[in-house]
Figure (cartoon, one colour):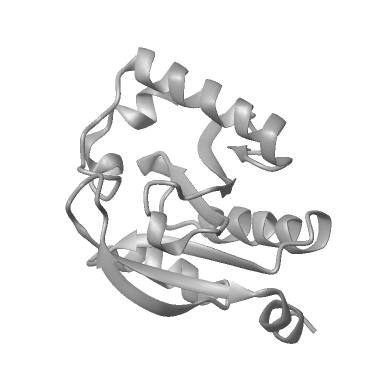
Length: 159
């Protein structure tokens, strides 16, 4: 995960675009583990089945960096560049959304991306999400777009 977080192209659309070193990555993973303990959901490692290689992560988290959307649970993902464009993020995020609605009984799930990150917006659209607002991320100062999917919309689109 540290190698993925150290890639400037991967991190381009994350907060202020800064890369993360091994210590920052370790601290991030520890925070994700605490979220599993406190919330009953969190981030999943995404691995390539045939090789066991770590491709990145997907999962659910509380987007506390953007207080105006709270209370909310966000689906997110981050994959290493060598795994882009293969449908992995969509497949993994769809599994996380299914987990959130079916296993955790969530009423809605959001996803937040920086304006201009068309690849992430395409994934959100494939998940059945729709844009609900545009605002500024106070932690990075960049414009973001918030997408949303309700449990009712999810049930309707998955029949």
